[in-house]
Length: 364
View 1 (tube, rainbow, N blue to C red):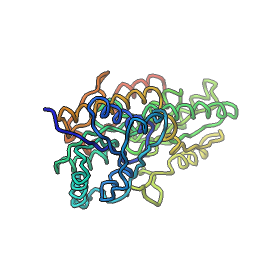
View 2 (view 1 turned 90 degrees about the vertical axis):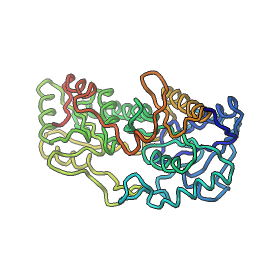
View 3 (view 1 turned 180 degrees about the horizontal axis):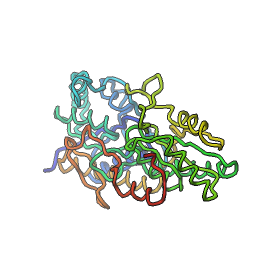
């Protein structure tokens, strides 16, 4: 059923990822050219909905002319603020009145619907606003590729490219010095980046959160490689990988959103391997390098399709949904079916079996 929309808002929330601007561009062009709608950019994520009109900026065609290849987001984003989720009531906002305030502000500003661009936290907040009567379509963003309901999230392909290229460069120094290089990539709860970048770079050990690992299994892989004349090894580890007899490694501080900040797994593995192998062992943490830079052509196209589809869904009255990639088609899935759920690497899935068939050690 068609809706009587005249103005929509668009915002980016959560961690940054390559392709955010490409989605904004597609939303603006499609809304203006196809439906004649006004578009308002909301600065600072959901925080821009708390009563300050100066955080709203009209977005016309001229505003998005050159942003397709740009990394980051012209609207800014944040993981912190007033929209934290409750620890006692899973899936609910810590302060439900904040959602009411945001919806009321949209009504006051004549914003009929929102396109929200983000990961699981963004989906959770969007779901709460939708339940209060504000039409919303979400676009799935996370370099970790861990959202249910879509084959791929945007930003993932670019992050994998960045990680793969970095590992390729580290291979040359490892080979030159007969070193073991331990490369830490992002992946709090899932190992998609580690697996894709590890396989794509021809790495020899890949450690992911879904498969607890032992140091001895890594040592055996390094020693086996010596028997075939390979005197260097590349170990790719997701930041959330867990030793079989230990816990996840955290730093002392917390992320902007309040979660414990991961860190230290590559350093710990390096220290443990240095005690057990003859090689020089070095670590490299790629960190936020994986979030930056211009999106790949694949991500640009996916973002453009996602952004356009989000506007079409609003025009069709199909709010309360997230756009998704299913095979080669852009579809829509109801937000309630996927919110607060995670897509993890299947233990016996094709990607894991491919790695094992290539004699890549997965740590178990």
